[in-house]
Length: 349
Image 1 (cartoon, rainbow, N blue to C red):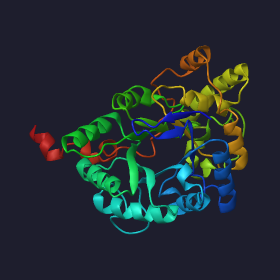
Image 2: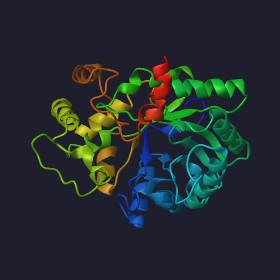
Image 3: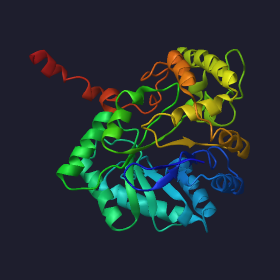
Image 4: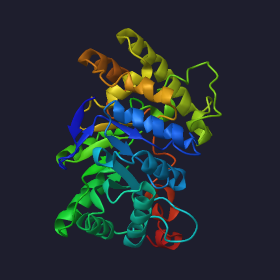
């Protein structure tokens, strides 16, 4: 296993990070089996574990907390805050009120006194960045978190957050967690360069493109959509959608590349993700022990320039075959009121 420093934090993390979104009722409901997967990953040199409060409505954090008993000091533990937790108002978002409450709930579920990396899961247009950064800075001073970062923020909001932190003498985002894979390379255009400019660590999610780079989904073949990620968003796997047709066309070309260099398609995908100089670690999110073992087989794979050139020819740098964030549109695009002036104002010129 290789290790890299997480941005400017001084924290060394494994190049592969164990993601736990599929632990719990949403994926693998067997808590003991999930714990075995975590222990196997640690035994293989992974020291970085990523979860979130909203994964299984807290169930993933509970599984991780139980599994890390006795090994907590050896693990860099990351979790997130933002999405709705339970019923009622003010149990989501990036406000101080919710962050201060949510971190206590996460600490309880994780059975720990501190979180190494606390991440804001998505931007919140309703909350001023100074409010969010102020709350997170206070949590660092209280010792409840060691560092904080953002996840799936556009480049302009990362820059704004850095500016606000400097102007208000607050702690700053030390990491970003964006989607990144051979099928979704859009962050290469701005997000990754911005993160490098500010010395931020980057841990990328969905390097297997929501499962399309696992090899399970092939052109002209019927895949089992009753388990795993298709159960979360079945529309993403409709073989008739033009976006999915494009993905499957690219997959066939990538399978040929993988065969030529003697590796599996998932191994090729993971090795590609960590080859970019702006990426610190790639999150692998197995549901089963078999999936974990298959992903770990490629942990030492390093792609040569010729292979990366072939991938560039199939999917040009900075381009997306599909939109990885389409289920989570930004407010400026999703809310009509933010895209159109009121009719009376338009009529008045």
